[in-house]
Each structure stands twice: as C-alpha cells, then as structure tokens.
Length: 412
Image 1: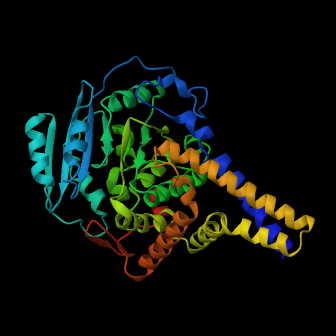
Image 2: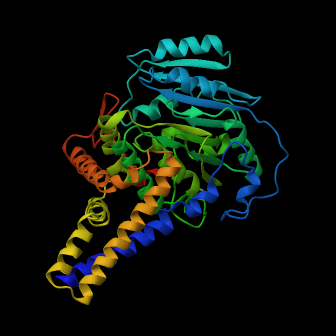
C-alpha cells in the first residue's frame, strides 16, 4: 500500500510543480498591464521583438458591444465604455433580442453619449450561427474605423483602458491585442471555481506561450479583442467563425496562424467584471464552455477529469491516508509518504493563495480547492453530457451539435 501511495504522491507532486511553473503567476505577472504601465515594459520579457515604435497617434477606434439581458449592469458597464479617455472613438451597442430593461437603459445612455449608437438585433441567429457572433456581425456596416474593439457588455472599463491599449498596440505594431480581465466572484465557492479555472487555463495556454509566435498555444479573451481592421477582415471576421461557441479563441487562432502579431496581457484595474451571477449561473456558463474548450475530445475530457480527481479532489485525503499508514506501521516509507502529502498540500495552498490575491478574493477561499475542483468535475460531466444529449443552453438559446462548428475548423 505504501508503494502505491508513493507512486501517486510523486506523480501529484510533479503535477503541482508543473502547475506552479506553467500556470503560476510568477511569469504571468510580467504581462500585467495597468493604467500606469508603460508599453516598453514588455520588450525584455516578450518572445515577440517589436519593430521600431510608431509615433504616438490616436487612430480611430470603433468599440462593438453585444448585449443580451444585461440590464442589471449595463448602466455601469456600457457607461464606463462610453467614458473612455481617448479622443477618437465611437461605441456601437447591439441589443441582442433582450427581454429585460437592456434596450431602455441603452437608449438612456445613447441620449447622454452622442458617440454611442444603438442597434437592435430582432432576428434570431440563422442556422450555423452562434448568437453572439451573429449579433456582432450586424455591426459590420457601421464599423469603419482603422481599429475594431470587441468587448463584453458585463465588463467595467477603467477610464484609461482604451488609451493604454492603443499605446501598446502602436508601440508593438500589433494586429490583435487581448486583455484578460480580472474576474470577480461572490462567495468562496464561486471564487474557488474562478481560481481553478484560471489555474487550468494558464497551465494549458499561459499568456507568455500564447505571445510566442512559434508556439501553437493561444489565449485570447472575448472581453477585450482589439483588432487592426485589416487583420480582422483578412481572417474573415466573425462570419468565418460563425459556428464557434468559444469565438475569442477561434479568432485568436485564425489571426496567429495567418502570421498576424497577436499579444495578450493581464490587468488588475483596466478591465474587470463578474462573469457569472452566482453558483447556478457559474454552472451554466462553465458547462457551456468547458467541453468546447477541450475541442469536444473525450480523451481530453477523461484526462482532465483524472487530473481534477488526483491533483485536486483527493488532496485532503492524502495526508489522512499517509498518517493512517504511519499509525499502522511506522516504517520509513510511510513517513516519506506523509511528508510528501504535507508538501503537496502546502504547495497547492501557496499557489491558490497567489491566485486568490490576484483575483482580490475572500481570504480563506484558497482552502476551498478540493470542493471547488469537485464542482468543476460536475460541470465537466454536465458539459460532456449536454453535448451528446441535446446541446448547450445559454442565454435562452439552445445550440445543438449540428449547429456548433468544431473548434479545429476555426484555424482553417
């Protein structure tokens, strides 16, 4: 029994060392971009060497914001977008068949901000289209600026967000800049989910690997996708990825695979928001995305489930099992197992503590790792089940397997 436990603990320890190195915030912090960060900060840390810097100019930017039933936050979020400290931009908000107060609030904001235009999407998405992609596509004839910024309607923008983004775009001559927002969560379980999701995301596709043109990894967030118009049109726009459920990664993949300069940064203050409203909404949103993020690959889903089980769920069990073996027979190997179990748990808590601090989460939520991973396991199972038994449901729309395009089609 000690031998079996030793093998498991060594494998789990190696996994946590890998997570700390790849998914940890050490190297990720080098890509933190806030309101006072100079664009030159990334030159020595980036795998992309920028060409000669452009003179500081203010090209025209069109910000495109799709929204469906976001009336409870729209006044603050869309209002913050309209208040950007940038001299040359306009905002297009697409009301995507909302049934709440979204249209009314958008109209009130349009009366306050003359550079805000409201479009009303009254048609359901045609066959083969995801709702968000179809809504954004409606703005194509109005988006005539040199740069196009696609954002989510539930994000709060710092007044300097657009100005800082354009400074970085101009300095590095970027074709696509994505800013990963700081997600917010209420309650330790919701925050635990965010910490697990962020750890998994950074382990599988860390921003510094996504920024490496030689790497196939891609990490771009639909909350903030700033395209040079030429690059956006060259990859076919949202029409080219109309059936993609995770459209941000699809657009990033197409841009990167066609040789465009793609760069991703994180932020603490430029962009933030609450992705999901409570545990039920977290569950629905998670199961919509997770299997799609695995490219509907059952082997990848099985590997992730096993990883969740051994690397997260069983963490509190390992010290108990090791201590029991010590009590039964205090052999050297039993003590080694107990020491390994303690080290693994300490390493996991230290890692989650750093993630929790980045998220500005509730102190103590880092100790909710095991319950949060169990929650993620349930979400993964539900996501796989939905895909094979009817499709994903999100924002009142059902997307079946026949409707959704395979993620691999995004890079063609």
